[in-house]
Each structure stands twice: as structure tokens, then as C-alpha cells.
Amino acid sequence: MQGEAAPTEAPEAANAPVEQAWLQAEDAPAETPVAAAEGIREAVSEKNETVGSMLDGLDAVALSMGDMRISLFDVLIVASIVVGVIAFAWFVSKLVRRGVRRFTKLDDTQQLLAEKILTIAVWAAAFFLGIDLLGIDLTALAVFSGAFGLAIGFGLQKTFGNLIAGIILLMDKSIKPGDVIAVTDMAGNESFGQIRKIGVRAVSVTTRDQREYLIPNENLMINQVENWSYSSKNVRMQVPVGVSYEADMDLAEKLMLEAAKSCDRILKAPPPTVWMSEYGDNSVNFMIHCWIKDPEDGVGNVRSAVLKKLWWLFKDNGIEIPFPQRDIHIRSSDQLERWFEAMAEGKVTKE
Image 1: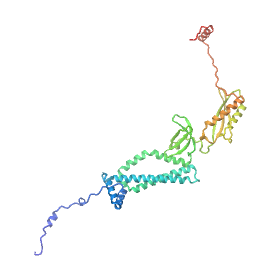
Image 2 (image 1 turned 135 degrees about the horizontal axis):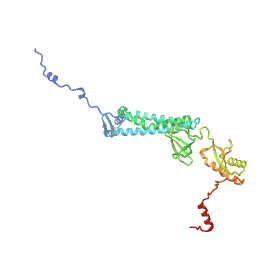
Image 3 (image 1 turned 90 degrees about the horizontal axis):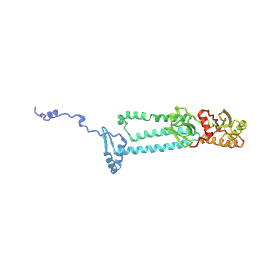
Image 4 (image 1 turned 180 degrees about the horizontal axis):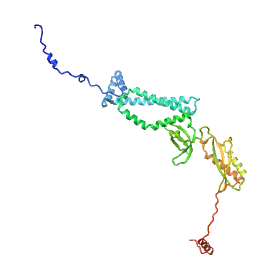
């Protein structure tokens, strides 16, 4: 037929291999886990080409691990944001503590508890703010999240336990700064100290000899604690005294009360009392009971002041303070008798 031309290129086109769509597509760039770094680099490049080229140079120095790409610029951005967020959280937590201390209606324990709770809230908010500013794709770290979370759970288990224990201690006010508690060292010697600080992990207790014990919060919550100032700071102390069997007991008791009342730190109410405790081997033993309201200033110095005053009162009134006396009985023997006879005859000489 005229007017119809035979197609010459059709067979070649039909026989040409068909390329797959994914072979024709361009390779996707490696993903960066910090989206904020990419946004900052593009924004700066639009404003200033010189600075943009410098940032491109920093971004060119990169480490690729599979689909994840971390450049030197990403590291600098992350470090800057982390430092900024930490400084911001520290400044805000400091302002929060100052604000809490201005509320005069709260006592010291309530102020400390409010400071701890608000500080934890500030740092938690700062953490999520930093994640948001960085634009970190947490799915890129999904491979390590399970192992990392498990390690954190085991490693910080005691830390979180002590943190919760410290908050509970502050809430029920069983332990608070300023309290005086009994402390036992590693050798089993018991002393007393004043609580200076309740921290995240431990309670700081300072004794009279300026030794500072850091006791974990959990230990104070689950173990028995002797708190001298839990409901009241009034503490009764004892001063043991021994007098001779030949002494006037009524006069001795009167002098003991006079010595106790002469000490400024001993309370007038309740008044000091004197009890006879036992008949000892060498003396009649008494116990002076007296009360103080400032145990953090020491107990031994009060006992020393009472005994010093009593020493002079006993001397002025002829009350004897006995010392241990022993009677020695020597059993006779033939050898001992011969030795005495030799001494009498002058046969024993000094060597």
C-alpha cells in the first residue's frame, strides 16, 4: 500500500533491554543522625558563602558506618548544644533553689525536698530540650539502645535507689539536716554526728572529731537509726560517780546535784537527778542524770565540766573518792619458808 512506511527502528526498540527503575535511581546520601547540624549548615551557607564553605569543609571530614554518617561539623554542633543545655539547666536550677529558699513558710526539710524535686524536673526538661534541638534520630541508635539501657539499669540501680530513698527520708522527716544521729564505724565504735547534707546518693554526717561519714540513703531507710533529735533535741546524759563507803551519802548526793546545776549547758527543767546505781567493789556508785538541748556541741565536755566541779566540792567537804584496793594473801610453802630463814640469817645476797 502506498503511503505506509515500514517501521525500521521498532524491532530494535522492542529488542532493547529494559533497565530496572532502581538501577536508574541515584544513590541516596548517607543519613546523618543529627538533623540540626544539616539545618544549621544550610542556613549559614545561604547567609554567608565564605562561612558556608568552611562548614562544608568541616562536614566533608566524616565517618560513615552503614547508613549513618557522622562528620566533624556534627560533633562540634552536638558538643556546643550539650554544653549550652547543661549551662542553661545549671543556671535555671540555681534560680529555682534561690526561689524556693525565699518561701519562709517552708521549713528546712520542705525546702530541701522541693529543691531536689524541682532540680530533677529541670534537668529532665533540659535533656529532652537538648534532644529536640539536636534533632537526633533515635532510631539510628536502635541497635545499641537495648544493651545501653540494660547497662544503665544495672549500673545505676543503686544510684536511683538511693535517690528515691533520700526523697522518702525528706518526705517523712525521719532524717533531716541538723539532726544528731548515732554512727558506728568499721571497727564497731559508736559515736554521734550531725547531719550536714542529704545528697543524691548519701547522707553526710560530721562527728565531733570532724570525721565525715557518707552513709548511703538506703542504709538509713532500711536499717535501725538512733536519732537523738527526731522529735526533740533534749538529750539525757549520765555521769557516773563513785564515793567511799565511809562517806556521808546524803551530803554526796547534794554535792552531785550542785555540780550538775553549775554547768551552763545543763537544763534547769527537767532538773538533774542523782540515783544510786550499785554497791561496787571499792565504792558506792552513783549516776547523775542531766538533760541538754544541744547534743551537736558535744556530750563529753559537759561530763568533764560536772566532774571537775565535783572534784573540788568533794575535797572541800571531805568526801573521799576511792581507788581500787587489793589484799594480797601469800600461801606458805617449804621453799618460801627456807627463803625467809635464809634472809633472816643474812645468807641471801643481792646479785
